[in-house]
Figure 1 (cartoon, rainbow, N blue to C red):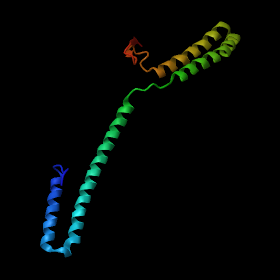
Figure 2: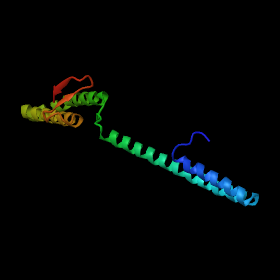
Figure 3: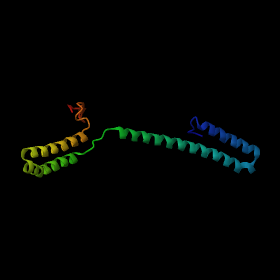
Figure 4: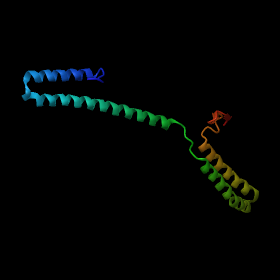
Length: 145
């Protein structure tokens, strides 16, 4: 038989022993001997499949763990752009209300709120923005946060 590796030499020895035993005992034990040998082959196959499944599962778990640790942008450009547009659109009535009710102090409070909301949004989408760390983009260019 060709294609046996080191582990299968035991299986080849089992087959040889089964054939010798069949010659010694005769044809009446052939069915029991074949069943016994096939049971050993099934066990060998089951063990090999189980090892492969465990290895693939471990590889998938490692890949999943690596992916979950990699930083991902929290927002797309469209979401950031939309947030900016909504901020500007809402700035007009908020400025009118704040300026109409409390003149300059009301206008300043309205704009402080608008700027504050945008700063929080920017910090959320760029976690290292205020830490002073340098980051690199996909081209390798660096800039100060």
